Image (cartoon, rainbow, N blue to C red; front, top):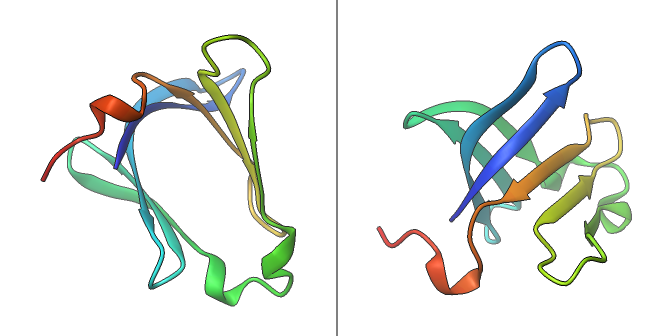
Length: 88
C-alpha cells in the first residue's frame, strides 16, 4: 500500500488516496477515506504486457505514471518513499 495524490485533471485537481497493488488478483485498488473509489482490473486487459509504470527522472522520483490500455492513465505523487509504506 502506498499513500499517493492522484491527479484527476485541470478541472478536478487532485485527491489524496491509498494505492493497493494486488499481484495475485492482478488489480490496482484506489481508496479515499477508506472508501474504494476505483479498481483497475489488469487481468481483463487485452494487452496485459503493455501496462507501463514510469517514475519521474528527478532525484526523489516522487511522480509515477501508470498507463493501462483502455483506462485513464493514473498519475500519482508518491507522498513517501518505500520505507514508509502503510502497515496493516
